[in-house]
Image 1 (cartoon, rainbow, N blue to C red):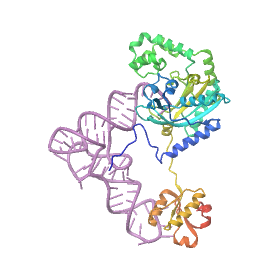
Image 2 (tube, rainbow, N blue to C red):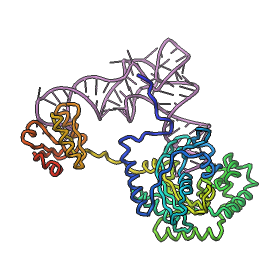
Image 3 (tube, chains in turn orange, purple):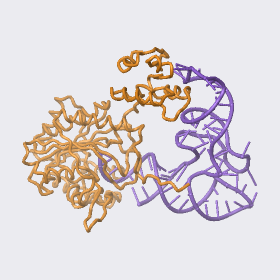
Image 4 (cartoon, rainbow, N blue to C red):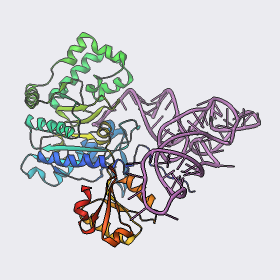
Length: 414
RNA sequence: GCGCCAGUCGUCAAGCGGUUAAGACCUCGGAUUGUGGUUCCGAUAUGCAUGGGUUCGAAUCCCAUCUGGCGCCCCA
């Protein structure tokens, strides 16, 4: 035999046994998001590399080491590692800023990140996400979080923990970063290598380092005081407070996590994550926040925006697997032409029906019927002569003759 | 990119230096030639991720590669 070819590392087939689950996720997304006025947008799977460098941020790991980038006709193109940048590009390019705000969009589809695969992490994975443009008020943040919670609910996921935080605006965050850097400066040599790196790149990410020696440093009173301080400016604080009030009113439980820092550079003010304890170390199913300066940074008019994305594979790993659905009927017959006609009749009436295409013996056909269908529709010589179909309920073993031209309306009653 | 663990039939696995490489499920065929899902019989890995090595002898030991899992990093 010829050598077989395998799927590439970090990618997976979605097999027929799995696809009903995916269909459910997609159907619920359409239903739930539509109720809030969100419309689906589908953007290309690859974009010009510069979009992600400018959009996601060139200090991020995603852009620095995880992108699938290739050259074609002297242009650098990249398989999308996330979809916010693409949606924003489309928003600007299609003049959606001229539409009446808010502009509410949702998407689903594959994303690509060159990372070491592990549980809940693949190189090709799928996200569903929403983006809302044009609303600076905290009600937008609240709606988007509510939408996430309700989508999860529609999937039977009720007990996930919502974590929120405010990163402040660029101004107050910059001041905070500088304070952190200042207070940690004397300890710099004692930080772990990762933290030394983060010190310059993104000091906010220092804070949830898991290395014990770093944790100990952050516990020192004078350092802890700075870390714990409410650094955000008045306007940001008010925005954050209003968001929390909305969430309280809506009965959405949340935990404030000062260490929550989304890794993408574009976030400001609100950031949030929804986590599960049943996912191992890749425990976030949903992550998002506000990104008021991204549209402008990508060349559009100043437009505030909020959104989130969920990892569909992670969602699926939390949902109990669905039972395989059986056919409505399986026709047992030694007259393929008659079986064809009956099958077509029932299929046109909306039933899921199959029959044997391989001239198998009667007993084999019946055995097959019992495995794959709720009813066996027996169409033998006797039945053809008398213009009937013997319908056998395979769960109860009850069998009845049904007049051929009433079969569609009656076989399910046996 | 780094560290640790693992890889035996379509699936779940036993075997841990000398076996014809167990067993179960699935699939297929037969027992019964118009009644299945319960029963009985049979078929299905010259092969143990791939490639090297050690050994009289390797699925079993060693090395490399590939893939998966866990952790770090990061993120959904």
